[in-house]
Image (cartoon, rainbow, N blue to C red; front, top):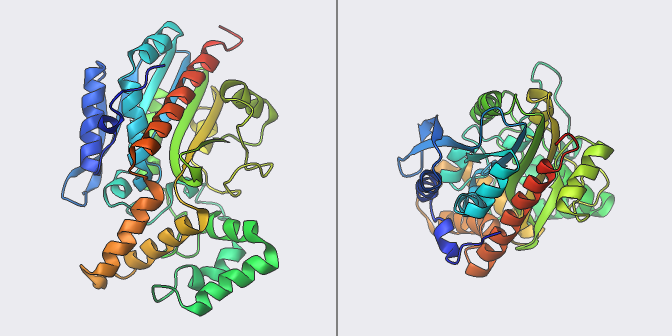
Length: 369
């Protein structure tokens, strides 16, 4: 396992810089990049795309996916890990020797990455968007009850709005409040954690990528890189498969007994609906699938949720213009999902590279090899 000595070179301060670094890292590794252009331009007028680089043959029996920016702004972290892996020649050699192909998907949600938003341009949380939209969508009565207080009409929130959230937690518990807010909702398109009423561009594009790259393997591993939950700098390995004992056992064999699960309450994440990893079972049904969300901590949970509430209020009030209030909301949003210190970046890369090596070893030692 090789960690770059100059960690900063793996990270970026804008989406455009992150994309340029990823393209350069892929080129230096001798990989071709297939870019899927987004229909809109970025915050600074730059082109947006979901960029895909593959190391290994198209018919490899084992495939590891490493993806970033499911939640836009979280791509600063994920892109840094991907760049470190692309620069790790020993990792590339070990994967090749083991017959494991590696698929790097950079910026699942490039619009959110560029605009420092967690959502897609449709204001949808991509990790709540995976449903059969011809069928009834999940209900979230807790969010329905609290919607006008979660994203209030005024910012900062009134004492009444904050008291309503506190009262809900007093009645049902802090965990229930977290679940009501973040579990996913489908009735409030100007709210947070909105799952949408249709497949997003990012969902449709990722399906095309998986159809091209992940329908011939017999074993599939996936590390999806996230930020925003847990202690600062700690990478929680959250089980990202259906509630299946065999899959959980594989995940813990690969990544250690510390792998947590939303199904047994051991994860810092609440139970969620419409999760992205569900496409692996659907679109890649031929493969034995094992995955985690690698979730890096930044700021305390309450601070993270408040940053999301403020950012959504700002999105709902474009008339605000270029004001100190806008800049402060944007600053807090960025800080909630990207800790721009050398020590944090070092920890992120170390844990991300380790998880990728562990996944390759897990895929390489599958029973039929």
